Length: 86
Image (cartoon, rainbow, N blue to C red; front, top):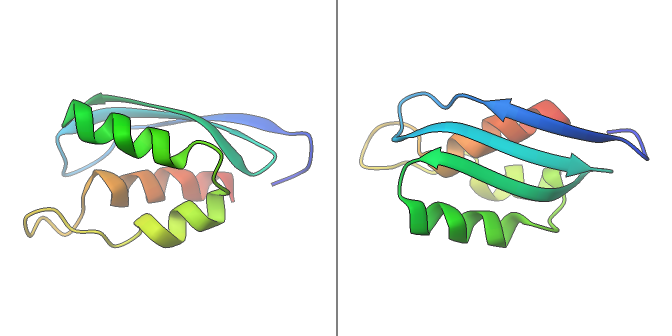
């Protein structure tokens, strides 16, 4: 991602309970995370942990996490959304 660039990623996750993810990224760093639907407390916690983290690190940590044998999860879907910023 270019220096001085801010982007908002809007992503509709597939195969999970959450329905919409909005992530603001500035200079390759996650500034805010909002998720509609899903497990509210867990997703608030995920957002709090991701704020201030570099996109590359977040993708590396979240990608491939599975929820109940679905082959994906809200964190995995978040990683897919964040890949758009790379």
